[in-house]
Length: 184
Ligand SMILES: C[S@@+](CC[C@H](N)C(=O)[O-])C[C@H]1O[C@@H](n2cnc3c(N)ncnc32)[C@H](O)[C@@H]1O
Image 1 (cartoon, rainbow, N blue to C red):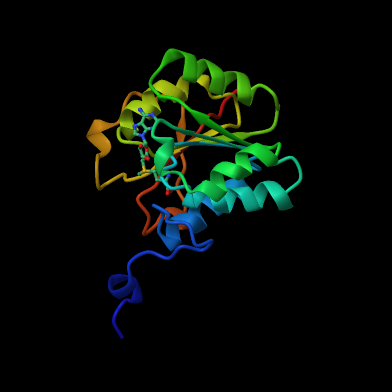
Image 2 (image 1 turned 90 degrees about the horizontal axis):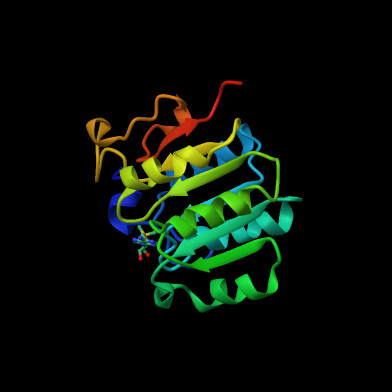
């Protein structure tokens, strides 16, 4: 039997176009559960497919919060955009992720909760996002990046010596690389 993914392309669980594969959605859900993530930051939303799934999580998981950042909001699905106006734990920000003020805002937003957070790097320059956002992680926080092994490789990664690489079968068959801020 041929692989249905090769014939049909991606699947869009909520009907909004998404940049994640089915396995990558599983990996992100696993990271949220395993690391008890309450605050999820997505850097680069495009049409909002992943945002729409995480909107569901904000509705059904007590205290789960989402912050999506995008510098080209004109591509964002209008229903996802509207959700940003009416759901209080679902925040959208139109900004360049490589502005100091944006990093400062993400740090402030994370600080509104002491629970673990996950920053998901999915814009045009993932190694640079890892470099800019890893320094604001707190103990127990996680940072992950998409398109590893496709757009960039091990040798392109910044110095992340104070982070622990997350290894899991859930990351197999994905292009996601993930790290935890461990230690004391
Ligand atoms: C690969 S798409 C995101 C896909 C989305 N995460 C998903 O799962 O469907 C990358 C997005 O990052 C945005 N982007 C690129 N550079 C950016 C920057 N410097 N600041 C904010 N967003 C940026 C692009 O406009 C694009 O919408």
